[in-house]
Length: 189
Image (cartoon, rainbow, N blue to C red):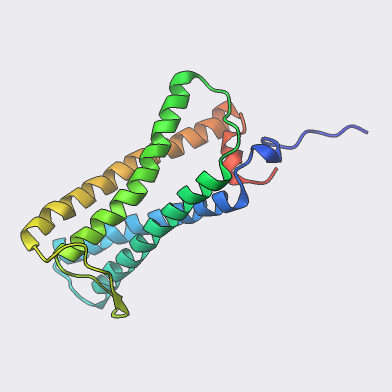
């Protein structure tokens, strides 16, 4: 009796279940943040609609951003404690770009929430759904708020670009290379 090999890399080459969960929850949270961020600023700033929906979008954005910050710190801690599977052999330039992309993603997933938190402290608009206020990171300063809000928006667009590169590389490995790199984070066999 012959058997066919399982698709993808062996189980020991996959990221652990916790790392995969952190990754995919982060993907969903970032997608949510991009949609709410664009929608809330369009409704509030461009259309001048400041109703319950716009305020709910802002509160959702603040809450999920705050959670992304802590989720990312937990991801880094998980990575430090449990490590990662052995690297897949690839050309040096490709390996360097992959490494820089991952560092940029982690950095942006910490920087963006901190900039947003700093911005809402400066405005000030720290209340989340009337449930609680985020701690203030700075005294109110509506002039400097504009600068920090611009930094936050710029960082969000940089994140979209870096994430787009990461997604393109994942599909390149899945469809073109077929080398199991995609399956390392997807899971299964």
